Amino acid sequence: MKRIDKKENGQFFGTSICYTSKNVEVVTSDEFLDMIIEKGCRFAWYFHYMPVSNDAAPELMPTKEQRVYMYHRVREIRGNTGGKPIYAMDFQNDGEFVGGCIAGGRNYCHINPNGDVELCVLIHYSGADIREVSLLDALKQPLFLAYRDNQPFNQNHLRPCPMLENPELLQKMVRETGAYSTDLMSEESAEHLCGKCRHYAEEWGRRPRPCGKSAILSPRGTVTIKTRLYCYSVGNKLYSFLRRSHRNSRRHKSFLYGVCCADFCCV
Image (cartoon, rainbow, N blue to C red):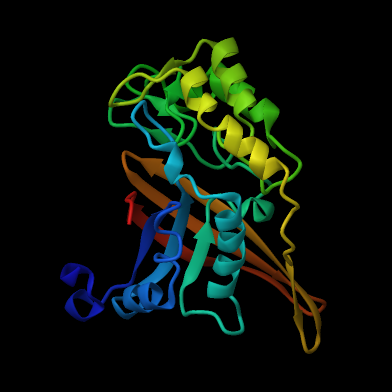
């Protein structure tokens, strides 16, 4: 922790935090946020725990109540009023701002250390090896084409993932395209992976949509903030940046909001 202290290197950085049923309140607490902000952190990626791999622990998936808490808590953290001096993003609950899932080559894909070109850093299936084909050809592999044909996977963008909230879709795409498991620990079938998500998907699907606002009101009128997210990952690192379009009756300008590179980790 001392090495990331801003007093040591003078740089700000971003974090990647996996929230689970056991740590969700700790990693969103004022004490935790104040600590990483003091050390120079300015971007915080929050990732919902995914039961990936044969020895995953499904009981670590947050409950639906905890996920609703995260929806509101992240918005409090980055709020213009009463928020923290840090930009917090929730990979699962912010789907409404980017039109659902951004993986599968839509805005993002993942290449693992073996060279397998995967849909997402959290979905370990592929049909192309970057050492054997070009990136363009890898993006045209049958699994990626099927993925993009099915996006968005749900009109409710709080159910964006074809694994976590719509597990029948990932299972179908893997089966129909002949994709293979690329899990680096041990091969896991799509049926086994998606089976662990079925109950969660059913429970979350019954939950009414949380209420959120995509427009900010200013004293001089309505200001619409449109945010586009671009990101890619290599190995276990996520590179991302946000471009915001600020539009009102007087002006329209786009600007780079931030850049983040962070190792994936559990806290």
